[in-house]
Image (tube, rainbow, N blue to C red; front, side, top):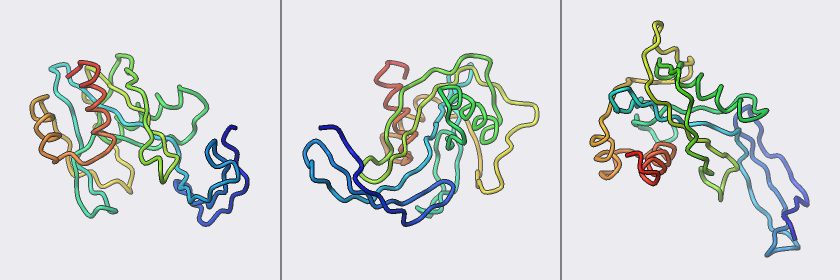
Length: 184
């Protein structure tokens, strides 16, 4: 038996987050199970790599965890019609948050669900190679608190991941995909 939504009730709705109470029939619970689901738009995260092979990361304040953390640039997809919407979002986020661009095709590293027991958010991962600085630099949105951007060598990135300094799930997922594919 496939998954089937029996009923749903909205508890909270904002442009980038909605909370629903769902009663859903699953293959193991055909009579339904009640679950609270945070619905969020799909997202992208991008690993920008310089021609020298270093990676660019941003240090950004993250209010929910009360910390500034190093992470690869990421953002939510405003309008997802097809794969092109994902790529356009990735291009936009690189320009806004880091101030770089590339003429090379983005390499898809697949996707993952950020917290599948809580949210429907799916994040699509990309590698952008041979990035170069844009003349007008970064243009972050007013609500973004990006403190700095800098280059990290592969050995620095490995050290930061293994020491626990990198705590962002998107960045860890990209790192894991790059390692698994033999790109690091």
